[in-house]
Image (cartoon, helix red, strand yellow):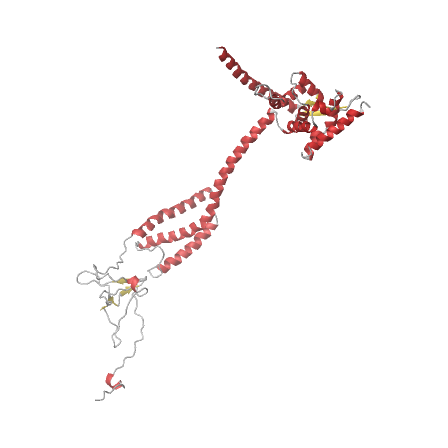
Length: 120
Length: 313
């Protein structure tokens, strides 16, 4: 959240744009509950992700019909609400993956072009 | 004891979050916070730190929740939003189109009755022009001119018919619709030259009395309604070819009215319009008969009957 040293890219804003995709990707691997999703996102390197953001995103995706949900009773803790992709979620993931691919391609092209121009 | 403290912590933290989100619609809030306590308990179970130390203030947590839940960050949603934007732009364009269209459409029905009346008048005008070949048509039918009353009657009847036809509305059939349009356009096309000639057409009436003594006194303006003069002699004999002049010495002429006048021609070849009674024929070509007149009784024996004034010497 702190302003970084001269970096105009606000990672929290970037994250906002791709959090849905990231959450869908995590769930595509296997079904998971809120806190576990957060942990896996952080493990994969997105350590700026907030707990509330993940929870809110899961609830919204579920509300939008992209996720299935079920409760797994747990002996040593609270019941866990598991989330997983349904067909709609998988479609959303496919589409978002394509969008993300073309987006990064474009940005890579721009960045590489600039660096090669600098190199010459 | 170890479990009750985090449980308390979870309950108070969750309550704070819930109250921070009190402004959300009930259904939305219920759906968003359905699993909140369980989730917070999960988080709390991971560490001995308090929830506030780990997650920040409940208000901030609530704000983050709200933005994650409410703001569509998925590309799917972005796409949908684009579609909505495109669609709404289309709607705006359509609304703009129909707005102009509607205003025009709203104006037309108000103008239509005026056109119905006007076209009736134009039809009568064109018919009058064609039947008489008369360049002396007046803009408004004049009851004192020949055929004036007829024109007014015809105009009224035409207006009634025209408005009735107009109120029936346009026929559904496209062909008929086109025919109706063509008739209306035809009326305009026919009436235009008549209207133009009406303004510029040479009138035979001239009020200036200097150049042509025979036509200097204009009938219609001078004695409206007077179409003939029947002079009688003192002894009750109908006179013929009595030349009448006004106080300025101009020939006295009568209005032509509904009758056709045979004007005699003089030796010089010029018409003599003021020889009374005028020889007239009505619309059917029959000669107009002189009216019956009650001649005043003249005193026949002037000196005997006169009771007055015996001049006394």
